[in-house]
Length: 57
Image (cartoon, rainbow, N blue to C red; front, side, top):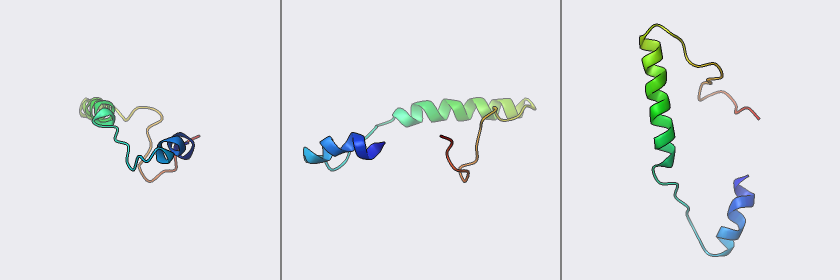
């Protein structure tokens, strides 16, 4: 995916593309919600995966 997206950008001379804090805006609230659920005695949301598991298609 990234190769297709970045090809025109690289051709234009761009060396690096930053996503800024966008990933943190998504990840940190999800982490907070998961931690709160576990503190309440729950479990991780269905579909959660360990970082060592392969990505699902």
